[in-house]
Amino acid sequence: METVQEILQTDTRPVPPVLKQESIKNLGTADIPREIFFSPEYHNLEVEKLWKKVWQWACREENIPNVGDYVVYDVADLSVIVVRSKTDKIQAFYNSCLHRGTQLCVNEGNTLALQCPFHGWTWKLDGTLAHIPCRWDFEQVENEAFRLPEIKVATWQGFVFINFDPDCESLESYLENLPEHFQQFALQERFTAAHVAKVMPANWKVALEAFLEVYHLNATHPQIIKFTGDINAQTDIYGSHNRAIIPFGVPSPHLGKLQDPQAAAIGLIEFIGIDPEKLQISKEMKPRAYAAEATRQYFNQNLELDCSAVSDTEMLDLISYLIFPNFITFTSVTQPFEFRFRPYGNDPDCCIMEVLILQPCTSEIKPPAAKIHWLTSEENWSDAPELRQSGPVLDQDASNLLLLQKGLKASAKPGITLGNYQESRIRHFHQVLDEYLS
Image 1 (tube, rainbow, N blue to C red):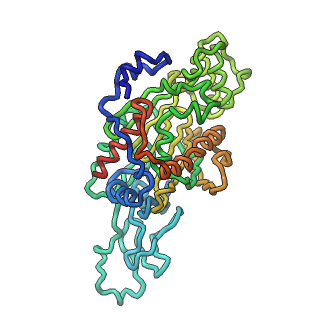
Image 2 (image 1 turned 180 degrees about the vertical axis):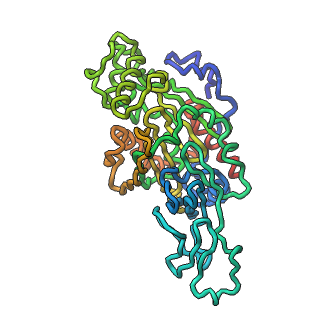
Image 3 (image 1 turned 90 degrees about the vertical axis):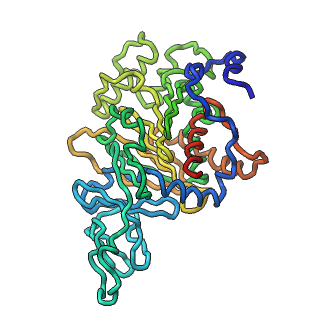
């Protein structure tokens, strides 16, 4: 295998400057075993060692704005009720009656108490046992011992996280340096303008990894490489999390030097849906500055969002964070996209994929969060109009997932081979995952 230095000496195509700086070190080059993407035994290990131990995003605070509002968060066989028990308090409980195990809640709603639909055992919103029908027949039941078992809860940037491990580190510690990175984004001030979900025919890691690299853009998304820097994206690795900064308003290095220097900028703003003829911008501006100013004016007009002090990079570029294990945030000062991937029951060949769009509030009263739009297996992401121009792009990504899942099972090769730089976020993800599982 060629080293990075040998590639730099022999390959005349443009390479990312961060690669020359060797910012990614000691990530290893071993193949990733293919069985981890479809093995039931590996799935069971993930449930015990990962999902029961890690902080994971369960909902947004605006999903439960009022006392008594609740949502149910499921991952594999685990089920959690996340409820606003007081105006200023959110709690989470195992979604199981302490009588004979019936699930207490499904989906989402508002309730005065948590009541079992089978026999009527009832708990207060804070988990305190409130009522047992025919209490005389349960002399052995002590109120304190029959509080609903609680799960750790913490909030950050408007997201509600849960952790099944009572001895886990704090969410603040778990997030490492990310709170500092997100100070200027203030996602807690946004609301969920769209929430679309679908059961995908692939392991959750297969779906997640499709969004951890831009190496696939040239083959999968040829319509966007004219304004997207793919192989010259920047990758950053942190403790458990990682990031990519993908430049927009510039052509892919695959295309070489374009004859029209403004083509990349025009292609980007047309993709967003901006009419260049309606802009009051000098076409003499440099392409990136032109595209940035166009998006500033667009979001000012459509979202009443003042971006006059926002840098060109923050206006244009796709800044993608993986918050381990299953939360990818394409953060932005305009309309951030949030992705979540999790097992669908105990089937390692399927997963739930969700996409949220967060928008800034244009009034002091935060609008209600969008209800989740579940797509059927026959529907495409482009059938969700709230995703706008992103729907067809997601369909292109989705078209690869079933092929990946089937191909991994059919392969004569024992594992998958990753690029040393462009797929380093995937390798880093697997290294952190291995630490949990071992």
